[in-house]
Amino acid sequence: MNEVLANEHVTLLELLDRLLNKGVMIWGDLVISVAGIDLVYLRLQLLLAAVETLGRDPR
Amino acid sequence: MAYYLYALCHKNAPQPEPSWPGGVASDGRFLYIRTDMIAGLVQEVDLSEFEMGVLKEKLQRPDWLEAKARAHDEVIKHLFTKVDTVVPVRFCTVFRTEEGVRCLLDKQADVILSDLARLHASAEWDIKLYANEKHRLKMALQALGEVSKAGGGIEYLRRKQRQGKLVNEVKEWIRTQASDCYNCLSELSREYRAKPCLACDDDERMALNVVYLVARSIEQKWLEKLQEIARRLNGGGMRMVVSGPWPPYSFVTPVVERDEPNE
Image (cartoon, rainbow over all chains, first blue to last red; front, side):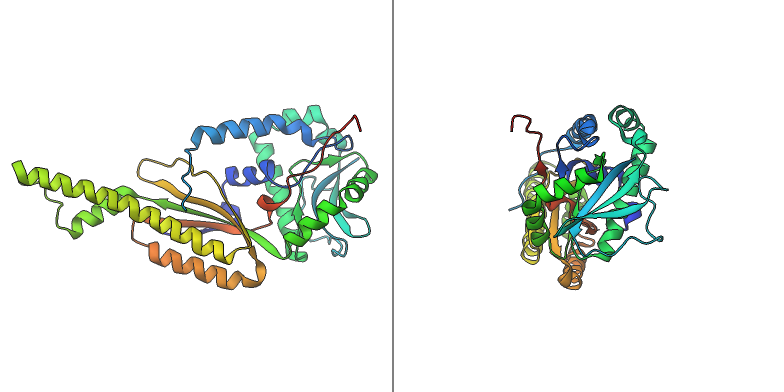
C-alpha cells in the first residue's frame, strides 16, 4: 500500500513542478531564454490550480 | 553557440566525464565555468534551439518538454552523485556567452554561497499521504458489527447516530496520522515546506503533501522512519508515497538576479 517512487516513475507533473517553479530563477540581460517560458509557468499554474484543493495545515 | 546552465556548486567539482547523461543537447560538451568560489555546470547548446521564439514554440510540444525536462533532471541528479551540494538552476536558463555566466556567479556570489552553505550535503524528499475515508469507515463499522442494515425505527436512528460519530472519528484519525507524520519528519529534517493537497479520485484524498530537506548523513535513519510510518499506516486506509532523494530544487533562493535597467 505504500510506495517509494523510483526516479523514472516520478510523474511528469511532479518533475515539471520542480523544474519550472523551483530552482534558481535568474533574470537579467545576460540570460536569453528563461524569461521566454513564462507562458509555460502560467499554463502549469492553471493546470495545478484546476486540480488543487486547498490543503489544510496538518498542524 | 550558447551555454545552458544546469546547477551551481563549489568550485572544486570534478570534471564531467564521457559517461555523463547526454543532457538537453546530446552532443553538447559539458564544462564548468568557475570563479574563485563557485562553479556553474553548463552545456554547450545550439543557440537556434534555445532562442526565445523557437523555445516558445517547442514548449508547446509535450514530447519535447518531457524529454528535455527529464534530460535536465538527469544531469543535475548525476552531478549530485559527484558533489555533496548542488544548487539547481531553473529549466532552460541559457546564456549567450561564458562571460555572462561568470558575471552572474561573481555578482551573486554571496547569495549562491549562502545557498551552498544552507543546502550543504542535503537532499529533498517529497512525502505524500493519501487517505481512503470510505475504507477506514468500513473497517470501523465492521469492528462494531454495524455492517447490517437490518432493523428499523429507533434502532435505525441510533445506528445512523453512531455512524455519524464514526465518520467524525475517522476524519480525526486521518488528521492525527497526517499531523504525527508531519511532526516527526519535520524533527528529522533541516527544513520543510508544506504544499497544497491535490485533488484525487473519488475514494482517496491527499492528507499531506510536504517536501523535506534532509541531511544525507542521516538518510538511513530517515528511511527507517519512513518505513516505520508506512508500517503504521499500512492496511488502515492510508498510504504514503515517497519520492527522493531529489536535488534540493524546492529549497533554493528562487531569484538571484533581476532586470534592473535603471541601475
